Length: 89
Image 1 (cartoon, rainbow, N blue to C red):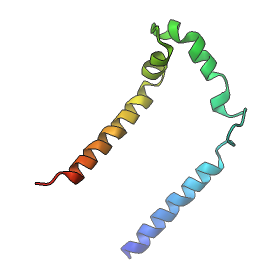
Image 2 (cartoon, rainbow, N blue to C red; image 1 turned 45 degrees about the horizontal axis):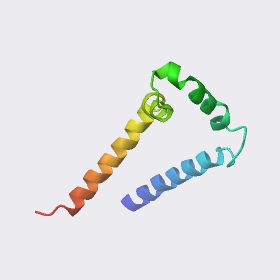
Image 3 (cartoon, rainbow, N blue to C red; image 1 turned 60 degrees about the horizontal axis):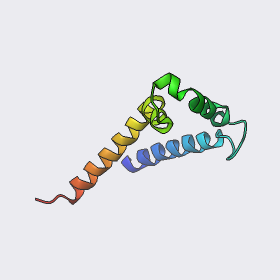
């Protein structure tokens, strides 16, 4: 019974993932939301908006701070998990 429930849950996750991928724009599509001018705004306004001289640092630390924090958290958890697996008493 437990195996059947697990398979149903995994099947549901698979369906959700397939539906999400089906809704994504095609690779290189010029009408995709990612290509609608946000990079030009970042490059033109980063110095004024953030006060940072370095444009890359302004984008990473000011515009995309939560994303960068999430990536750092995932990497930290991965390192802790690998350390816990390899740690032996």
